[in-house]
Image 1 (tube, rainbow, N blue to C red):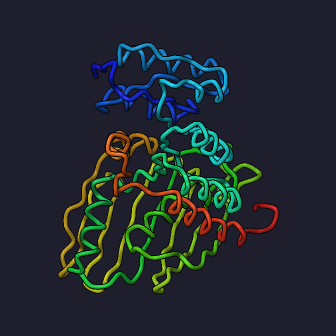
Image 2: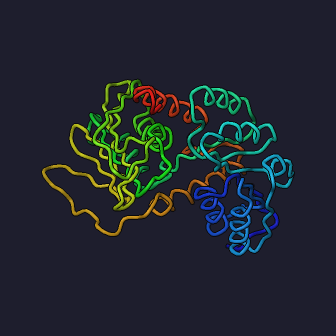
Length: 336
């Protein structure tokens, strides 16, 4: 996509799968903004992504040797934080201290204490701060929320979620909550507009694909304030494909989001035809339209100086971190 000198200059912190994905999506599909700089602890990776972005946008992309040098660049007015989870709180705090607008990938922090501290900082800041729960921008989830709020099919009684990755060689059991289930936790809060009050993890037989620090798969039971039971089945090493789905059981229908992104309503003794096809290898493919919509909303938020209503706030990020923390506490001690 052709970029302009007047575009909002964005810096990307972290050039792994998320940071590189955001950088390329901005370059290819987001109007009014361009990637002006990248930092990654691995300079070789940062240079590679910068080269790809330059090719897509026809603008040079600076590679910084530290986060501090990127944040000191006055031409960069906004940043995307896509560093490892345990660094999010630190990097968000530094970015806000530098006066930057921020899109911070989930989770807000890797523990409750850091999440509370950085949420307080974000709430006091005049910067735009959005947390990267991209499912809030996915067409199927947006339609699901609309249908639930309409009350057409009665009250929500139960929710079942599925989350399966192809392979996760470095995952830990705690990460299945703080890095994976955190998406479902946020979506449940967002859809029902109520808090999650209790979280408990159930264990099952462990796959041979799991490393020594991982109990995989797991099942997570969450109860909301009104008593809705939400079950999240997670497998980090499914091997057969990336699969994310949700079934919302109401008084009059079953509302189903399937692997390929469609919302199906099962009602009146009728099961509609469901889409079949090849599964994605990871979340970047399945949720590409949602990521692009999220990035466009971030740019719009910066221009209007008001966070887009679909965005999760720092307080939403805090609530999700607290709920997932409850799940971590229910794990065997050596897996917390």
